[in-house]
Length: 176
Image (cartoon, rainbow, N blue to C red; front, side, top):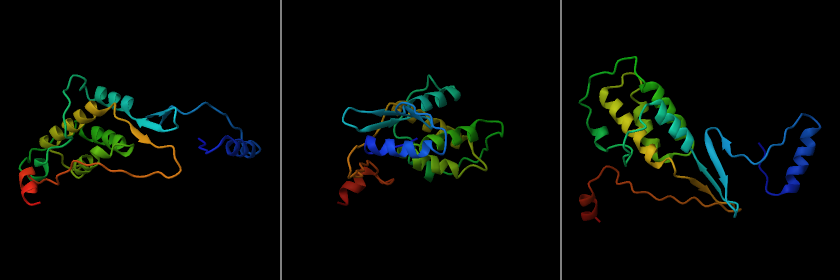
């Protein structure tokens, strides 16, 4: 894959590489590592994983499941009472790995939740399984979301968050 700022740079690189290796020039990339890539008229790129998420939901037989928000309930961390372990012949580990792959590719909204579930790899419980299933239902409702990468020379990172860090909203408002 070759990314370039102007067509002349691309031609020069292709000519140089063609002397040493056989090249095959394809059209613009539309899929890469399970991501769909779109280029808008103004040059901005849109990236999403809609098909990868749909395939994962199908693998888990959760096509009819309802969607949820947020991806994980805040009580998961506080409540550690469940000690009943899952049987070893379940889909927990496979599902967790697939979620790791989806998270790694442009889904920061589920990173913390997936990270917490990964800590329970050695002895997952039925509670972990239920949290994992909830975490699968969240991307189902947000699969159409796209990450927009601007096509300018000075990219700027803008972060919008609705995190309350596990606090009660009334407590946070009264302390301000």
